[in-house]
Image 1 (cartoon, rainbow, N blue to C red):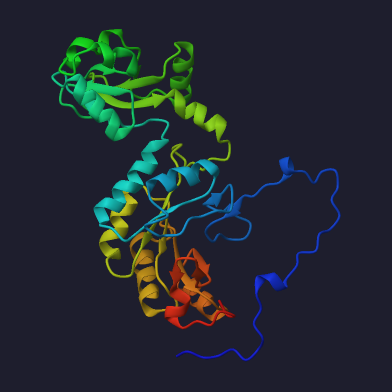
Image 2: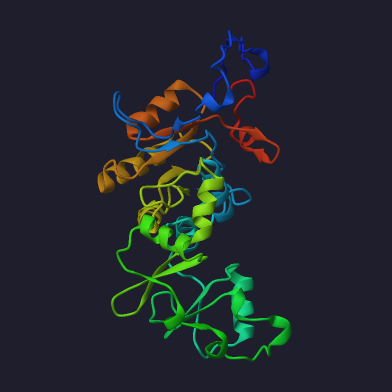
Length: 332
């Protein structure tokens, strides 16, 4: 039931943060913006912390895989939008997780029978210039060679030229065996001035790549947010309808944190969803709930098992939720 608050409402512009004394130690280099994302017990370390307090809205026009990568580079978290098929959303999560993975499974692969035209089309589609040539054209097939931008000249070659004729054959490739540590792999890259190092199994199958650009990227983005496997941290939205299928798919894809995407979170459906996740996964899956606008709604979701609660229903340049839900401007 809707109701009116009798006391006066306030806006942010009515408040002022009064500055205090700034010592010689109060400089930007000494400021940490690390922010806990999920609940944790007093005296314990938060299991998920952002390096900058910035997340993106669970909206199709905002949070796709590109935003997931961009925000993780800066130390924040993007929540991949839920208004798409389960398979499509899980694939987006996988692409973010694989983008900066110390060991990257190849998604740009060729057969020896492919042509230069196929190489150019693949580069256009994936944006990757290092391509594995395998016996079956997959990222885990037997490695036969590599194609990089140094192996061909578009202006001097026939588009029908076969990959087998201009690739760098496996015999001339510097690689490392499966089980090589990330530190050792990076040492090999630097010692041999490589852009990419293939990791090969005992039977000659491609396992993954380690890229020089990932090392350089980390140096250029010291606040980037990584998980325990050196992959970007990414979140995803869920709803209160198909969560029994969507949540397992996102967890299998490697998602780090979930959030319920809803116009108003103080509801039976969000409580039921939280209870299902806790019953199936315990505390291993981190999930937020919301949105709510008062203490009663917050406590309801916190007691139901939410790891964090989104506060505020609103009003933005393209958002009419506040008007649609009938929530007064002074209260949101």
